[in-house]
Amino acid sequence: MADSSDFKQAGEDSQARFQTYLIGGTSSLLSTLPTIVVFPIYKTIFRQQIHNSPVQQAVGQLRKEGLVKLYRGVAPPLVMRTLNGTLLFGFQDTLLRQLSLRSRDALPAAALPALAGFGAGLVEAVVFTPFERVQNVLQNSLNDRHLPTLRSVLSQLRAQRLALGYYRALLPITARNTLGSSLYFGLKGPMRAFVAEQGLSPLASSFVSGTLTSMAISLGFVPTVGAGGEHAGAGWGRAKGGHGLLESTVESSPSERGSFVQRGIPCYSEVLHHMGNHHGCL
Image 1: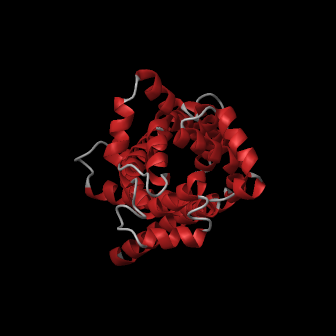
Image 2 (image 1 turned 120 degrees about the vertical axis):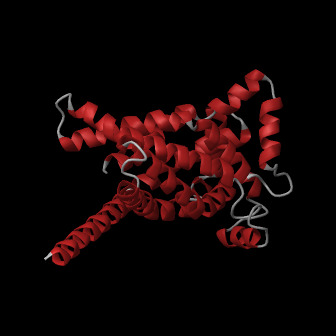
Image 3 (image 1 turned 180 degrees about the vertical axis):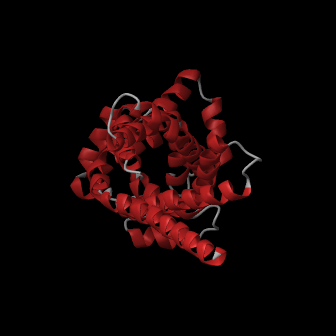
């Protein structure tokens, strides 16, 4: 009788885990259209940060390049968006269940979602850093002549060592993903409960809390986005290492450092609504 009960419980847990992966994957799949819509805004952000230019100059540069080059580099984020929710939310739920079973008394229950989010963010960084690397190389106009096609970019990256090729900028991307996911999953529950107390429906509470949490966290990670973008998208022959990039930022004047950190914030706030919509579905 006990064996039958345990088998039934295991089946229910397996089905619940599958549903988490399925919901995350469906949410990611639905976000592909918004990804196409906001991609020009994201590309404007990237150009601001990598060239340290104001928004008007970045927009003018993209307008001059034309519509065809505007969507150069859109393929990697489309693949990432399709797979990201499946991996991030599904793996976080799997880790949370394992942590709940194995560390009931060692850690407070409120800390477990954040810890599981940290682990999921780490896996996410390892899996998706190559996609971000390809995307950033394609978006950098300095690479247009030397690396005109996706195939040429992939060929060039394969010829490099992993640390200089596909996994360049792994450190800032890992910092962004692990800390961001940890904060998001740690704050999502309390924020949702707070919003629900204001009289909103469960769906509206999830949506609003996801949007607000994503906005607050993402704005805090603008510097890592800028550093990661410049590191991963640097042109061949002029690329700085991660240490060199940090040194150049630290050694610059306070106004220059502030300018680099803040570049892209006006456009970045627009993209956050898209991110919040994606996270708020779960």
